Length: 235
Image 1 (tube, one colour):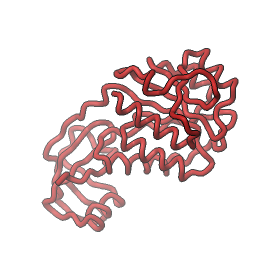
Image 2 (image 1 turned 120 degrees about the vertical axis):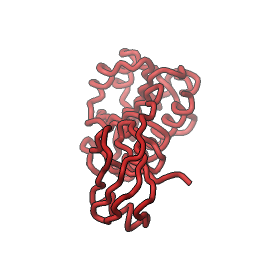
Image 3 (image 1 turned 45 degrees about the vertical axis):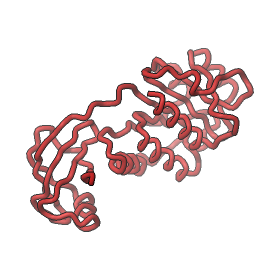
């Protein structure tokens, strides 16, 4: 059986012991019913994996002893998505959770002309990312960046593979057909109502490749999920 993973963002690489915060301690001891002597894993979200055992099963200040530590190799290639957040927060939260489970590295909230929601609840979204990272037994926490204007993203992000998914009936290829496995990838996912023609034109002028995600019109969060799944499985 896999050992449970707990988030330890402030643990030092050379630590020999660690005290979980109150929320994590309560979850470990009271909810999961772990006790003194049980082994657990700790993740700092930066690729460090710690194997430990519980030395004090206090439900407010659980203390563990570090038995082993290792650095998990980072993903060979970066997967970044710039996505316009939806007015319905639950939908984008679902995307963040599932994209983290699949293995996304960076999420950029994209502010377009038709974006319905420009402000984000960073702390809540960060908690969703942490929970998904732990649940999927990963050790790198995705980077949730500050919201960025569309023009800034297309001009200042220079990933080797830059893509834009849009719905206009213009010439574009299926995402799977244009992917070049092994290259860092940034894909733009638009808001409900799609990117404007001027935004699409601007992206293409900056070297973005237009792609299709299928024959049906997808909601924003669904389009994001389809893109992440296709790109991740091409690596």
